[in-house]
Length: 133
Image (cartoon, rainbow, N blue to C red):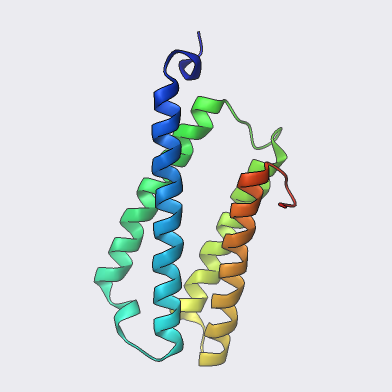
């Protein structure tokens, strides 16, 4: 018997943790990006980076648990494959949007593109469609 069928509470709990972590992660990234946009120093302080990393560890752990519970394969379930590829793009864009880009204008552009990428991943996840909704 599949674990999902014998323990549906595990799926619901894991999904709730995952969605909450996504919300917290995107909210914190947005706050940090807006802080950078107005030239504040707090968004790049180690404390906020570590809080972000902690949230993302919970997010990824819950995501991997859902992946296992639902027995998904990103090579077969194309929406998941696209979402995982976009995750890498989001991480790179976010890194440039918060710190790595050389100019303020470039940081703003990377930040906006990272947010667009995050929203696209959410749409893909909700619709289970590689092009989102």
